[in-house]
Length: 144
Image 1 (cartoon, rainbow, N blue to C red):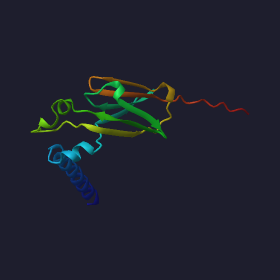
Image 2 (image 1 turned 180 degrees about the vertical axis):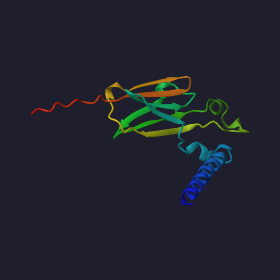
Image 3 (image 1 turned 45 degrees about the vertical axis):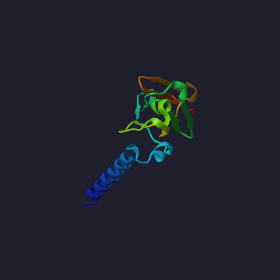
Image 4 (image 1 turned 120 degrees about the vertical axis):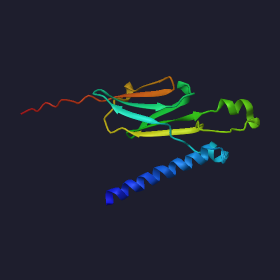
């Protein structure tokens, strides 16, 4: 019974988040839409040698991202500009707005030891991919 209750609460939470995002995205509260930091879809996966963080964020350039690693937290942030709104200014009136613009930020906890000076980031086809090489395990020799 308790497990079903927790599932129901989680479903309600997800639905409330979706409805809130729908209201903001509708353009009914454009000032709120512009000032709220949003989180782009992010995948994290592990291989034998590295951890990969992949962020779906089209319409950017590689230099538009601010990427940092501190206390095992990888932070990816930036601003995605709306070129249509910038081109048309106040004469633009969206009828439907689902693409998110403005400040974004995603944070990923990295539980593995990482070789920080070998981290690489690439941006291609609307995806930012950050590859964090795992530190190699040190073999300890026991002296008797």
